[in-house]
Image (cartoon, rainbow, N blue to C red; front, side, top):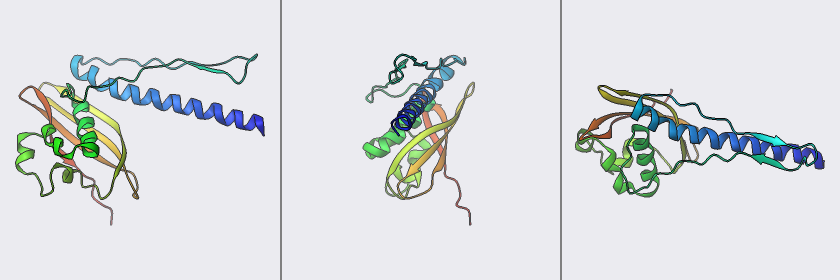
Length: 177
């Protein structure tokens, strides 16, 4: 039983490290691709278990990039993430990430209503990002988890306005009947 617990613990550690790497790769990928048009490989994390000390697992730490919330994001993916973060903590500040046209057709209830979420947003993850530099346009797809519902997605279209990426459309999948 003790050995089974140890095996399960090691498996859990590997899964957590993999998720950390995946999130790190997603958050750094958009910035590099948007600024340089290059693709960067992400180095894998090393998992080492020494035979003499099977209970000790060494993991190569990979820092997760952070953004200053006061600064406007430089890349399209960052704008979408900032918009979703604002939904959770500062719905009044969400409109600064929207294009002028989107602000003009704001629904009653504010920019949070554009996401058409029926409950609390528990989490989100960027599932795909396509950025074109000339003309500047981007499509970012995000998986969202809302309390009490099945996972869903939102597709954000972005363009540049006054030198900044802005959201000019949010596509909500239609419900299957």
